[in-house]
Length: 166
Length: 155
Image (tube, rainbow over all chains, first blue to last red; front, top):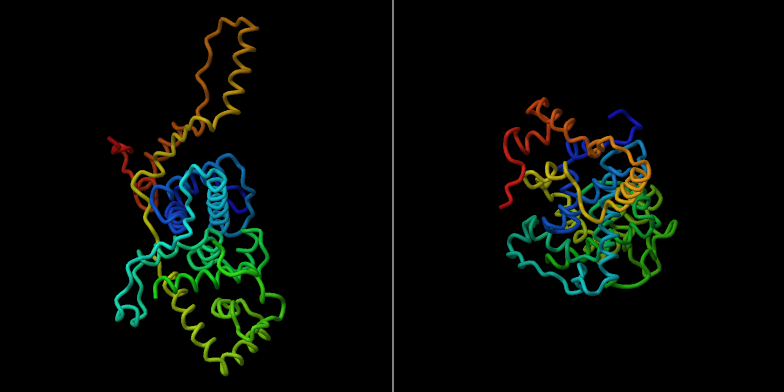
């Protein structure tokens, strides 16, 4: 792919397949939904529905993935017949052994479960920050919210996660 | 569920230590290197005197560390190969409308020429060729599904 050209979905799948699946999995918290999300993202890329901005391709991909995820969450909210992905009850992972917590470790599965318990908007901000590693300004642009909101969602998301894993 | 209210409060310009007297989300911004030098000095000065904020900083820092330690996740075998034929009913309304219109035109013209095979998007032949000729190393598709192995193992 040359700079400035829109990558094809085949290039995305070939060169960034693992990255894309990782972001989708961290957002959805399970394999089935992650696969659906990846498919939808590639469909959007294929149809040319997403404006490509030369720069970080992975930043662009994670922006599409996050917005597709949030669209889906909102769509399901509007159809109450579907099981809500955002169960207000926290999904509590098995609590960690005290010595493990003291050692500063947390099992990835437990962290993922706790992440899944966050409200979708918070989860999106946290994933873009801590999993993808985007700066706040880029996250704000991806989510179309002010930087202050990004900062607040990241902070609260981390605080909730820590509370669940305490 | 939106815990708390006033999302974004305290994040205004220069509000490194907001009205409640604690650093709040400036702590995450500090950890992420997102504060201006002036804001950073203000938060650091506050941390010296505020035990609660020091504790919160530690707590948030731990959560941040755990999140950043999450490993990449391997996509399931064959995930992308299955998408080479991503035909899904309900997603082709435009294509179907086009085909309908084309059929109507064909009927009017009473053409006796056999209809050409419909174009397949993406071009599967090209993809298969690219797949077969690509190097084993560094090609995610090839690594996932070596040529000759059925791409679907669903019963």
